[in-house]
Length: 276
Image (cartoon, rainbow, N blue to C red; front, side, top):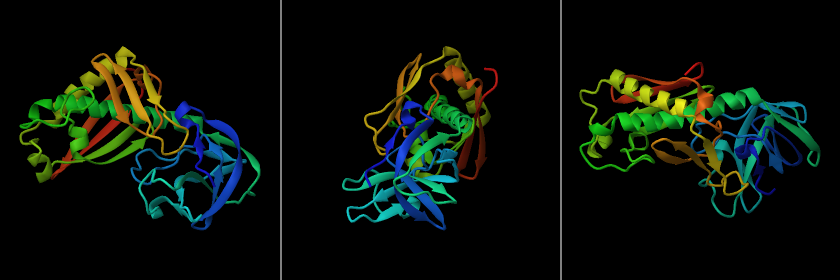
């Protein structure tokens, strides 16, 4: 099998392609096509959930990343033993079904457009929330820190443990422990209610600006290094990203963040939708 050509970065949600391989995924069937509009769950940074939809009329119950070695052995998901994009490996989108389909068959692929749109909104809002929180926390660094795309100390990248995109939102978890203090950030005395208020005011302004959003897509392969861009009033923001997004901040409606703090773990919940 050759690396799967992916069309979801261009916003496509449907297509037709040949089934070029089948691999077991537990007791289910993993179907690989030459070209797909489906966004799979990434095995290294599983932030955006897999697309839903159908392949050849069958429900796609999961969609995961696969990798084929030079010997032809295929690994799926967490079992992939090499880093994303390792040369000499073929990178596959594996559509998981309960029922098999024959290799060589031409099939229609249909993504659940509503679910995709909700995840795309959540992913764009997640990036904007990170930038807004970085700005709100900029005064709490005692040392010079790596800047984010807008020039503020990049709290998000320095402290993040996990990020999960949800329909119309996201959940990001940060560690505020010793390693972050050594980098120069202190959370002592921070009122995260005020941080959220400041970030939400910034997010409202960005939504009102109707800033255009686009993806830089350097190649058709699953592991191509795509980049999210948003032309904000403060400047062009760009973040490496393999997910899907809306076309403008105006599509998000109201975007808000809220924080919860437990010991040294900070959780940020971002929601979007409704009137701005």
